[in-house]
Image (cartoon, rainbow, N blue to C red; front, side, top):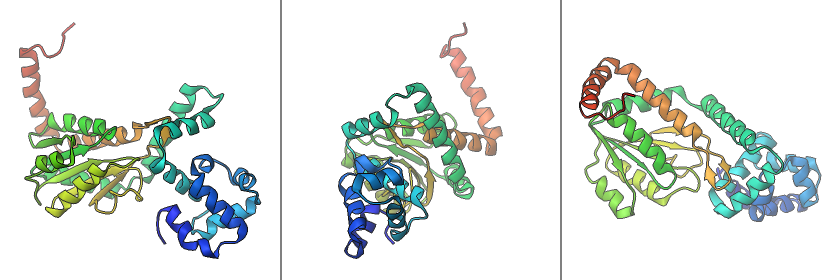
Length: 285
């Protein structure tokens, strides 16, 4: 069974009933309208019963309507333009207090990411960072902010951190020219996925480096080549992605590294504090 809901629909389309074909067409061509509809509302939208919608989700292999709806929402996140995302957000949040709705949504993303985090994968990813000769970190567009946050914090405790700035595909490869099996690439990518990140991950794998990927789901094009997959919810809120869950996982990575290398890190910060004092890096007022 293929992962992408559009591929599942195309695969089974010839066997669908008339009502099921109506639902299928709505998902393929009006996904921006139906992604956040309940089963009953979707049924009314296409002119079928709620039970027909629920059976349709079952035919596609989903474990209930909720899982089916999340698959449609995944399609939305990967396909929509910023203006289409704004329109959907307006429909969802119309008449609702923006601060409450956005912050409650962000809280739910952190909780969902925490519940679905594979602790073994997380621990092994941290171990790979600790033993890497060089840690390459890359993120494009809005994910570049995440890459910078991780790179800045790791650079305080390691000299082996290299932030890759993806101004062009060629320059990505040039900055990763020396990557090898002794290194780690930490890549960030969330919908809409950057082709530069896909190329960067494949380049690192080609030269034997271990690859840590932080993305939104196993359906991400960066998930399959990853040695360590860290999933973080980033559901859209207007044209802007929510980055609270990815940042929270970055925080957890830094805390775990600190716990495992506390003595060395404390010694390093003692030296840094002397330098910061000498050159008045921080105000004393």
